[in-house]
Amino acid sequence: MASPPGPARLAALLLLALLAGPAASRFAPADNHLIACGATAPAVLPDGRRFVPDSGCASMSLRSAAPALPSAAPGAPAPAPPSPLHAAARVFSCHASYDLAVRRRGRHVMRLHFYPFSPALASARFHVGAGGFLLLHNFTASSPVVKDFLLPVDADVLVLTFVPEAGSAAFVNAIELFSAPDELVGDIATLVAAAGVNRTDGLSSQVFETLYRVSVAGRKVTPFNDTLWRTWVNDEGFLVNKESSSSKAWSFGGRIAYPKDSRLMTREVAPDNVYNSARSVRSDCNLTWDFPVPARNRYLVRMHFCDIVSKALYQLYFSIYVNGHLAVKDFDISSTTGYLAYPYYIDYVVDVEDEGMLKLAIGGSKMSRPGEASGFLNGLEIMRMNKTGGGMDGDFPAVLDMGYLVSKGFGEFARSLLCGLVFAGLFLVLVMLVLRLRTELKNNGTLWFSQSMDSGEGKLAKAYQLVPTKTDY
Image 1 (cartoon, one colour):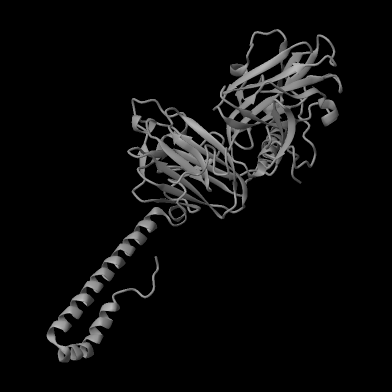
Image 2: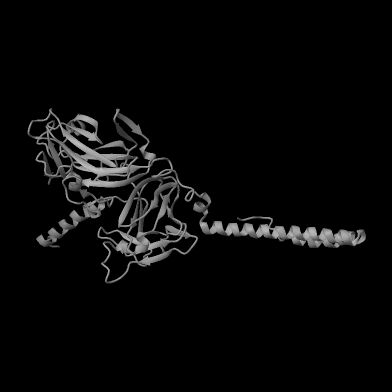
């Protein structure tokens, strides 16, 4: 009879169970392209994801009219790149496209990694389009940056196109494309303006570029601790009055109570580490954050709430301000959720004009108890929305909106053009030969003309056979 497991073995089994639980519940997207551009070997990140080289990936293909050259980061004595993804890049001197296979249509997350490890890359200027949307216009990556997009995909192949400016080049270090969970962004939000608030819809057809993800009063959240591999930064750099005694930072060590079997509120919306911290404000004060943003754009602002502040329900009331406009007055989160430590978020849409600064604030309410926490905030996300149906910076430009180039590839287009020119040249030569033959027949008399016609029909027929009767271009 086998002996019962000892304490050491029980501890090991318990540890394995604890580790396997979160791993089993991690998000598994239907599409999951992780591409290390220009690399010669896979790149493995600390979060466990494995990026494969773009030269040998079966689920994607690279098309370019000119060689798309890999470029490696300089070796010693230059400092090592901060990520394995930054050790190489793919450089384009002309139009180039990645064709990415799509298993499930719908919303996808696309992240483009740019790490300019040479002066030539830092000065490169180019455009980027995907799925008929202009994502980046006259873009220059003078410093390391990750461009994070959420876009609808309605085809079985997503074409990601890079177009350098004249005399310049384009480059990319890594590409992420994976299916987004359905609950990530809904179709309805609240439009906030000087005239008041109104319901707005149609968000499901929008393209979003995430500019900020902020964990309020919390530590930086890395992709290792986020099921969608996102990064959340601390809010102190955006607080207007950091030294104010009217606010207080909170930390929660308990369990976040996600709604059971909910399709709207899951850990894919935001991780526990965002809801485990908060910053509160007293009933007679406001707490404000300022975010520099590109002017003359529309933004989706998502505010995350989880009441880790109250000792009991129905003790907190506060107001929410979006870019100086009152979005909601005397908000009672207890009536909305019905529980403490229960995550919740609100989506607002706002236009930012010439000021180029987005201001967000929570204000205390007289309905709360004097001297105690009145309002709080756990997290923030700010996403730029596309200006038109064509992309983030206007309509899809002509330099990218070349349907034949995108669908067939620049090389095939060039081959077709060459075939057309050859056909036109052969036809012109044939016409000239026919005209010359007719002139000679007239000069040599009627009898010779009749005999020449009888003997020349075969020659003419053979000449016409040089012209293709079926075109494949």
